Length: 130
View 1 (cartoon, rainbow, N blue to C red):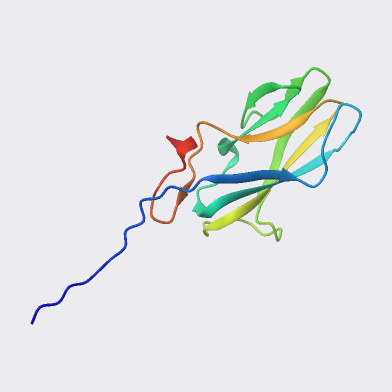
View 2: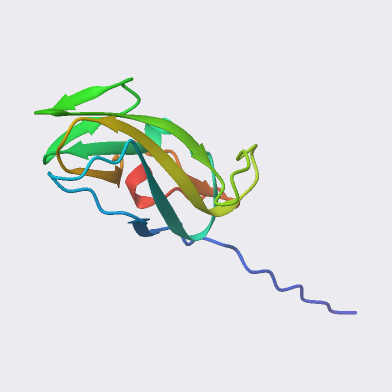
């Protein structure tokens, strides 16, 4: 009796598809709680504040510093939840909602940090996590 078992091994790392926002900040707009929808190519694990960086007025701010100033704008990451508002609690998820609290005026954006530790269920780390 000869039997061959085929298995597929996942070796493809997750990638960042987009970081979007419902409202765009600009120098004349004040948005106290800016929400960013971060979407990956597949469900991921290990998302935490260290995985993101806030950019204010084109100044790179690594996290998780509690608050940083970029000219007149002060911003800090306040929460990371699932899009439905629930906690992440170790479950694989392909999108997260990142809330950044800010005060003052200026531009604000969010980026995936080069120090990100995000991986898929097979343990493949995001390219930013290398």
